Image (cartoon, rainbow, N blue to C red; front, top):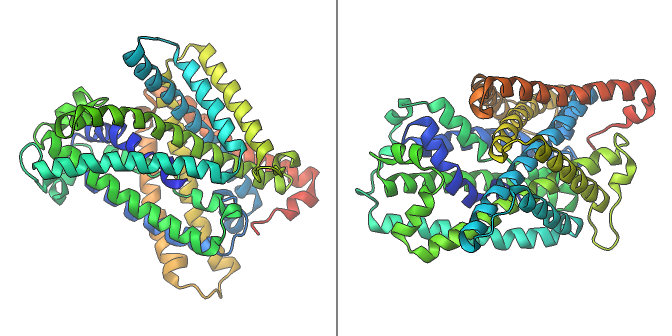
Length: 452
C-alpha cells in the first residue's frame, strides 16, 4: 500500500523529468538520497512511537500523544485535508492521461472528468471491500510497473547509455549547479505516503514488528529505486543534453527512452502501466483517509457511524462510501468551475505538499516531547528519542522553508499560493477550533481522546 502510494512508474515517468527540469541539474539522484536520509531519520522516531501509540491515527495520534489533544486534532484535520487534496489532484491527472491514451488508441475524445469519475467509482468498489483485495490488486500492479522500470534500467545500463556509464550525476560538485533547493523539494514529494504503515495498524497481523520493518523497507527501497532510475534516465538521454530534453519534452521523455533502448512494445506497455500506477496511487490515498476517519469516529470526534465495520468485508465500509461520495461531489464542483485539470493538479498537490511536510515536522517534535515529558524513563536510547527525530526535525523545517519560499512555483502563481496557503492553514485551525469546542461542550469526550 505504501509503495503503491508512491506510484513508482508514475513518478519515474512523470516526475523525474520535472525534477531534472526545475533543478536544471543532473544531480537529481543525490536529491533522492538526501530526501531518503532525512526520512530515515524521521522514521527512527516515528517507528519508536508506533510501539507506544496503539491506534491507527498515525500523524494525528503521534501529535496528540506528544503535543496534546488540541494540537492533535489540528493535525488530524490537516492530515485529512492534505491527503484529500492529493487524492483529488492525482485523480484529476489520471483523467487527463487516460483521456489522452484513449484518444490515441481509439480516436474517442471524452472530457477528462468522465474518466476521473469512473476512476472514483472503481476506487469505491475496491475500497469498500476487504483491504486484502486492495492489497492484491495494488500488489499485482506494483510488480508489473516496477518490473517495466527495471527492464528499462537494465537495458540502458547494458547498452552503455547515450555516451557511457558516467557517474557525474553522483558527483557532490553537481549539487551546487542549478536550483538544488527546487530539486530537493520535488524529490521529497516522491516519498509521500510512506507513513501510511501506521495508518493500517488495525489491519496488520503483527504491527509492532511489521510497521517498523515496512516503514524502513519502504523509505530505503523507494530512495534506491528513484536514485538509480534517475541516474539511468540521465545517462540514457545523455548528461549533456538531459536538462534541455527534460525542459522541452518532460511528458514523454521516459517513454521515448523505452522506445529507444527496449522496444515499441515495452513503451506501449509502459504507457498502460502508467495509468494503473496512478490509479493505484488514488486507491492508496483513499484507504489512508478512511483510516483517519475511522480513528476519529471511534473517539467520538466524528460521527460514530463512520467507524462501522462491514461484517461481510471486514472493512470501514461506511467511511469509505462517505469519502467516495465526498470526492465525487468535490470533483464535480471543480469541473463546474471550469478550471483546467492540470491547474487543479498543480494547485492541489502544492497545498498538500505544504500540509504533509508540516505534519512530519510536527510529528518529529511530538516524538521528542513525548519521550522527554511523558516517558522519560523509557528503555529507548537517546538516538531513537532525541537525536534522530531532532535531526529530522531540522531537515524537515528546512524542507518546509523551501516549500513556503517556492510555494508560488508549486502552485503556479502568487494568487493561487496565497489562497492555497490560507486553505492549508484553515484546515489546521479547523481542528484546533473543533478541539476547543469539543472541550467546552463535550468535556467527557475530549478527556477520553487518547493515542492508545
